Image (cartoon, rainbow, N blue to C red; front, side):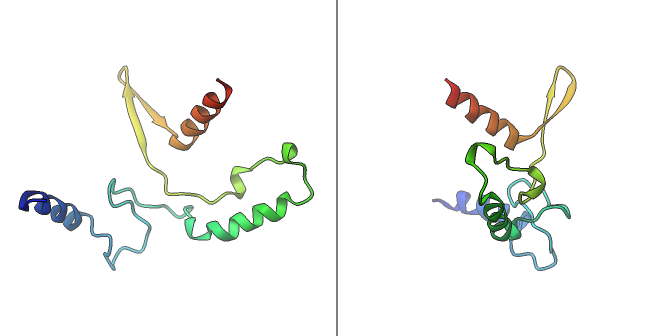
Length: 105
């Protein structure tokens, strides 16, 4: 690593300080996206245990994972312009559909 690379890294962290004590919300240091009030990844363990308890006694093929019971992650704002129209992309849903399609083929 040369001095130019080091300066690039330092500049990046000056603009996106992950240890900013004035910032109380979860923030992605790469994209700058700040979590809203519905984001609750700190509760993931408790939410996971609650989901597992709810699964007890229910056959595997009958259990459905309800979005309302899941932890809410930091939402990445994926916006693409296509033919002069804006398109909002849900990256998690896209990933789920791609993995489902891959399993079918």
